[in-house]
Length: 120
Image 1 (cartoon, rainbow, N blue to C red):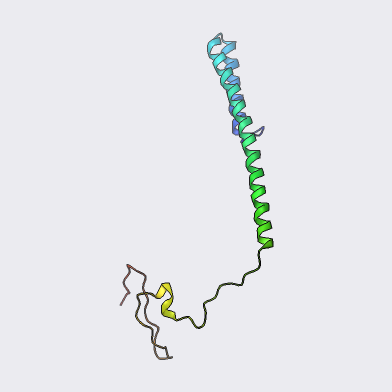
Image 2 (cartoon, one colour):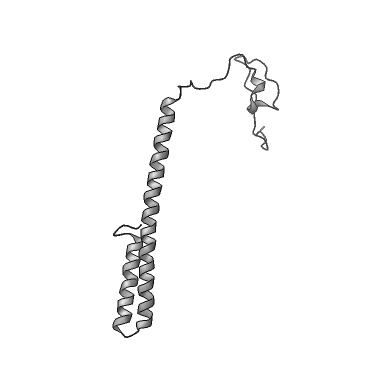
């Protein structure tokens, strides 16, 4: 944004040209005000450049710290449910009917989301 072809640079150029136009036409008061405004735009562009550099440095630092923390942490296996844990303890199944063992002939019970009715 504050590069040579950025929006702040273009705005500075536009305001500077408007100031020059005013001064050439004898409207010096507006030309002086536009010159002051162009100078303030330059200052804002410099501040944005500094903020951008600071932000880039902060992001790089955080990225480095995160990479270091990940490399130091022990690898953890993917979390899988315990084979001894009862199915009814699952938060997704709370409040549903008790599940009977299924056989090939028995279809699975319909489980609906809270607030939704099954299409029976």
